[in-house]
Image (cartoon, rainbow, N blue to C red; front, side, top):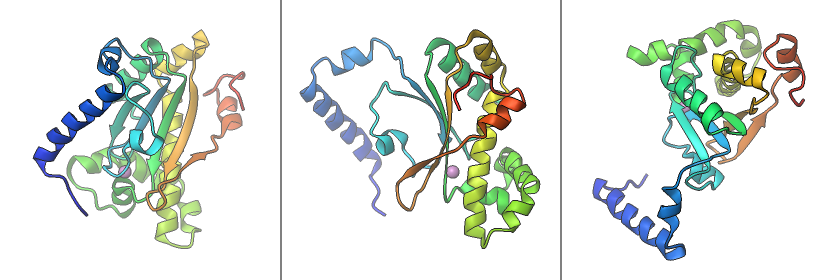
Length: 213
Ligand code: CO
């Protein structure tokens, strides 16, 4: 794989600025006025899934939070602050949790190879392996199990979004954004959307009855 040198990054930035100003002399003046992105994206830190490139979104369109294996932890002040700011101040219309195939965090949890702090961080994924052992064991090979685990992880993290006080408040105020679970397939570049168990989550009281099916 070809990599840029460190100096390239700053040179590329200058060229990008020149290109933007060539298209619109007020481009950065407009950006500086503020943001009102309709999307909050919670994704994995993996360097192979740069959201703006993958979805052709521009600066100002997506509020972003990333961590290893796109976790929504109810004790993570970083994530919770991002979620609160996105919902209450930016008033995003959609919250997207995006996992991906070939995720190192998922694989480390599955194989028990994570060490140090990452080992702690991926514990919720290890728990998913235990809870869904039967379903995972029935799959033909490890590749299929890892892909399914990536999906189960995304569904679990969307469910965690619904357990936050921020979301409970939004439900009461009728300002709950639409929720989405995505998987990015590194080998094809395509993103697919998971079907959320909306009826089940309504029955559990996690989603309001009037949430669209
Ligand atoms: Co990953």
